[in-house]
Length: 463
Image 1 (cartoon, rainbow, N blue to C red):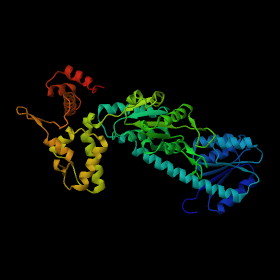
Image 2: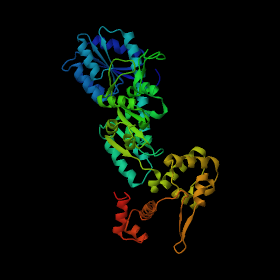
Image 3: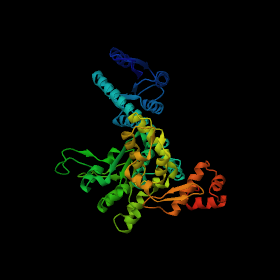
Image 4: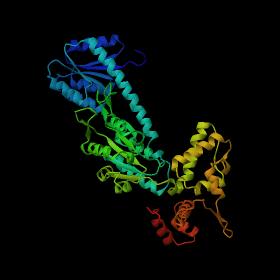
């Protein structure tokens, strides 16, 4: 063996067995420690933290099961082999339930034991690597990675925190395409206690109904012509973790009935299977459709809608998160500067005005793509109006309302926008300039503090 020796602790009052196991493992390059009682074994375990423990069932003063419980509580990743020459199968089953990796019957076949130890160490290494990767993913997909200062998103952050600290099993995320529904679903998963388990996602709109059913539930060998072997579905793969059903509004009413049954019973059958499979999965459904309207026209079932909507998150479009446009812009500039070795620092004034006036029908995804396109094609220190796609030039050429006395210019897009929206934008910008101070923002807009508070409430800006 290479590097630091792996430690094996043998807890057994039969000295011949302890001595024999220790010597044979030492010859293979392991460091071995022996203990003749449960108390001594626990003392050496605390001091040396071995990777593998051989634990006898019959020990002076304390039973092997009692010692096993303490070891599992202190170090869940330690590999424990439970040894017995006396116990019934019930004792071995109980040891496995508590957390033993495997049980060994005496007299011991050392070659079989050696192979089991090597197998367990390899499995443990893989599990530790997976856990490490999931911790990295947790850092990558945590709530701190959502770029936003808007009041609407701060409210959503509070909802997410409540979801992740609970055992809520169904969440419905609604919002236009590109608003970050999958991002929020991943945050819910990786901020919760489920982060060590899988996150699975399936786009319900991308698959025909028959294929979607087999992807969700899996199938048994021989369930249909091409079912050459058993396959586990997304519900089974996500057990203990989270399953995102993206574009849930696109599934057929027949599939809706099947999905409702799964959510109600927390169980399912593989296609062609007879046995119910229990599941522990947090189901997050997302959609860009208006499901209320879909219920009215009969294309989406009411019972499924209200079963999914135990907790509801509605992601606002980017045009309603005015404060976030420039913040997200700087974030994506930084990302693509690193990726493409560019040195852009921001937007020039004309491009900034276009970004703030544009309606962003593709939301955050569109903003990201615009920044990526510019940084691929251009070499400059600033993103300029001439760098932007054609839809932004329409903004520039649109009618301009000018107040020559104040010097204020408002760019009116060809498709126009409501005065209500313009009022909201003005209030948001004034509050941003005044660091949220309502009195100063009201003064900037030549209105009273009571008036700005009334208008903030009207536009959903008062939290």
